[in-house]
Image 1 (cartoon, rainbow over the protein chains, first blue to last red):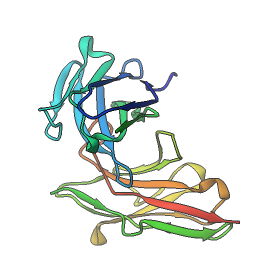
Image 2: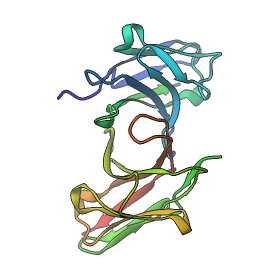
Image 3: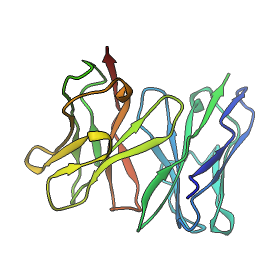
Length: 112
Length: 114
C-alpha cells in the first residue's frame, strides 16, 4: 500500500510569512495526526483528527497555527505568521485500529 | 502527567557489540509502549510495540524490548549491532493501542564504530 504522502519536503521562509503543508494519509485510515519535531527533541502532537473532526488540539498554538481535514481524507497545516521557533520537521501520520500508525517523511521548515 | 525519559542522548557502540537503549515512562493507566527508529531525513519506522501479554517483545531488524512494570521501563536491546543501525531511536507511550496520541522521549542517537 502507498505510504503517508507529505509535501513539500523542504521549505524556507522568512519570519512573519505564511506557509502551508499538505498530507495525504493511507487510504482508509480514519485518524490523522500532525506532529512537530524540533531539532534534538522527540515529536510532539499538534493536532489529531478522527475523520474530519478534531479529537485533540490542546498543543496547537492556535494564534498562528491552523489545520483542516476536509472530507476526512487529506489535511493541510498552516502557519501564519511564522516565527523563528517554528523551525522544525512537521510529521504527518495516520492510523487505523487494524494497522496502527504510519508516519510520513515529514516537511522540514526553516524560518529565517 | 504522561512523560517518557530516554536518559542517554548519545550512545556509541562498536559493530558486533550488544546494545541497550533505556526508556522510562510515567503513565497513570496501562501503557501502550513503542520504539521507533528515524534515519536522517526519514520518517519514523516502528521497531516494536507492547500492548499486553508477554513482557519480552520481538521486533524488526533483530531488536527486542522488555517491559518492566515495577521499574516503569521499556528498554530496547539488540545482541549484535550492525553499522546500518546507526540512527536516532525514540521511545513512546501511547494513550491507546493503535489510534491515539503518542508521547515521545527526546531520543537517543546511536553511532556505530567499525
